[in-house]
Length: 141
Image 1 (cartoon, rainbow, N blue to C red):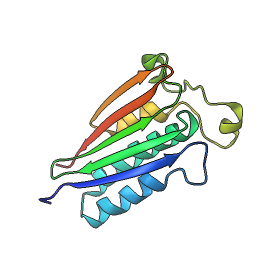
Image 2: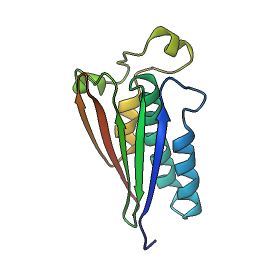
Image 3: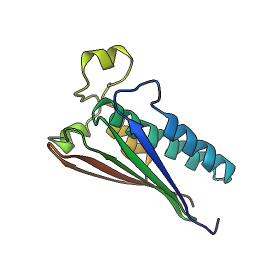
Image 4: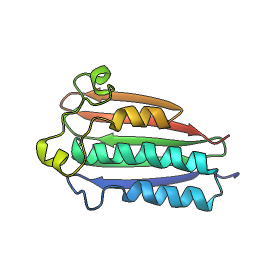
C-alpha cells in the first residue's frame, strides 16, 4: 500500500445500538486492503474496546484512523469526565461503569487493558473535567 488512508468516525454517547460500528467498518476496510488477519484482529479489538469506553464513560467522541504502509494508528478523543487515576484504570477488572451498563454485559474493567494488549503502542492522556485521548498503533509488518 503506497497511499495513506484516513478515516474519521463520530461515536455517539450512551447509544449501545451503534457501539461497534466504527471498529466494524475499519475491520472491513483493512480486510479489503489485504492486511494480515492478525493485524485486522488486533486493530478491531483495540478499537472496539476504545469505542465502547467512549460510549460508556466519555459521552461519545471522535475516532480518527490512519492506515499507512507500516502501521494503523488510531486516535480516540472524548470530552467526558476524564480518568482520575490512569494506572488504576489500566488494572484488569477495575471499572467505574454504572450498574445498568454492567447489566447490559459491558463495564467489566477490561477495556483499557485489552486496548493495551492488542495494540503495539498505546498512550492515554486524560484531564479530569476535560476528557480523554487514547492513541494506539498496530504495526502492519
